[in-house]
Length: 261
Ligand SMILES: Nc1ncnc2c1ncn2[C@@H]1O[C@H](COP(=O)(O)OP(=O)(O)O)[C@@H](O)[C@H]1O
Ligand SMILES: [Mg+2]
Image (cartoon, rainbow, N blue to C red; front, side, top):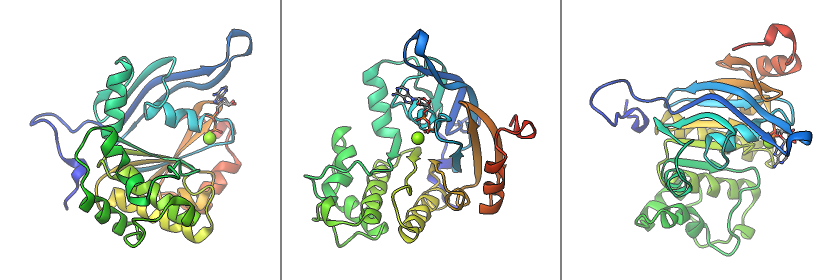
């Protein structure tokens, strides 16, 4: 099977994990009103895997994604993406790495309304100073079912179509890891399913690694495994998740029996 994500950068040694977090902590606010969003999270994700992150509102899911994607910096701990440590380097270096190796999909799409679908899609290439290959934009937009919408503006698209543009934009740089924070949160069931299939395809066909926050047990069932967060800590893992098993586990999150991964 051809999997880009499994390709090795070096001749010896095992391929690095797609994502490694070691004792990552993050608080917001000042001493007397500090909120601990992440409380010593350690985890590792193999390349070519699809992981869902679930947990109650305020449990630290978005903070986890932001820190893992280099959009935010942890207070302490280590974040490694594809073997490269994000924590510790300078801002310029981090931005460069993030633009080249990481894709991000947001719940509210974050498309630029003044740019066309094609322009939005190739923006990460422009920002990282890479050649803007229009054929590539067309190819990737065709793959997400928008090959006939290249010149449209975001406000001429449905929510599901906008999110597919956002996915095309996240894929265009061929990133090692794609982070998605509630990518189906604003979508109807059918559009959500299309978006989930695209994320699944990015993993299964193209060997990318996807980490997706979701509230929805059905969405989580598209992943290979689910990580549960509670109060900024890992509170369990479920492999080969079914929607029912996920819902059941969520209902008991916080029970003592669910502690530890
Ligand atoms: N920018 C911020 N400033 C202050 N507190 C924040 C900020 N972002 C998140 N928090 C707090 O950190 C905790 C975790 O938030 P978040 O990661 O957004 O959780 P989730 O995505 O699981 O709902 C919450 O208590 C939240 O209120
Ligand atoms: Mg969130």
